[in-house]
Length: 322
Image 1 (cartoon, rainbow, N blue to C red):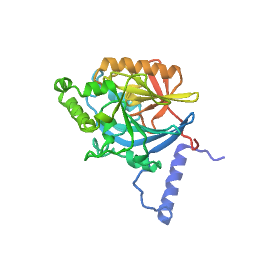
Image 2: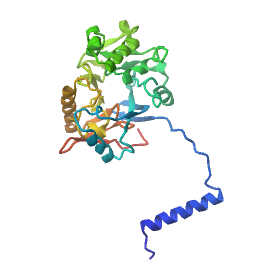
Image 3: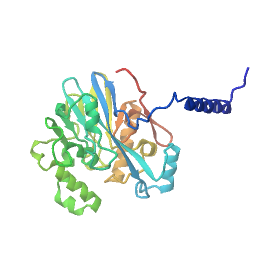
């Protein structure tokens, strides 16, 4: 019997590729485009569709995780097999919920207004067979730009003209307070002004919700303050199944699920955000509850397990069937 080794395999593969190249049979132009970023799955009788809005190559420096040395953060990135440590591939994934009677979009993406590599939500929504006009409700979890900018075009035209818009009352109170604007850092002042741009002419039409509110049957608001004062997660419940839409309770799981005590620069109240993160990750781990994370690698759904030092995210297994 011929002895097989890794070297034998690699040499054989190289010879085969060379032969195909000489014959011309394998030559074909590169496509260079990705397939649509959408993924459907079921929760009870609900049909959920993860909609990718793109990925931000976010530069990383010592300020990104302010309570941990940069070298430690970079080592965590190496441990997670990330291709670089000077930037983080930071995904954006919104969630479309079809309850059978309502089409609900949870958060709206960047609207192409944050980075050239994001702004794909509308095209992926259409690829999923849904027009913006068909959306019945938009649920906003908090007022950071990457969650609200997709409500409007760069020219301030409303993208989902027929949708009721639900926003957290505590977010509205904080981000529309002029005293808070005056006290904010320059970066955060930009967030305040962006809130005014997005919601200024919509104020009278917004549905402002409080913690525990059932916004639509099976869609329940859960306060998860810290990241922002009125940051919410959303519980989806259908039949005997439920899941927690984490929003930004934890951003990229390789860093902030594995190390829940790490703060991210975007947390307005870092200590409260850490407490909230640990509490909710404890809950979903104990309940073996399905989760979706806005900044988790696409399709951004799976489960959380508790470990000796933190938690681990296990992506849901892809399935060709709903």
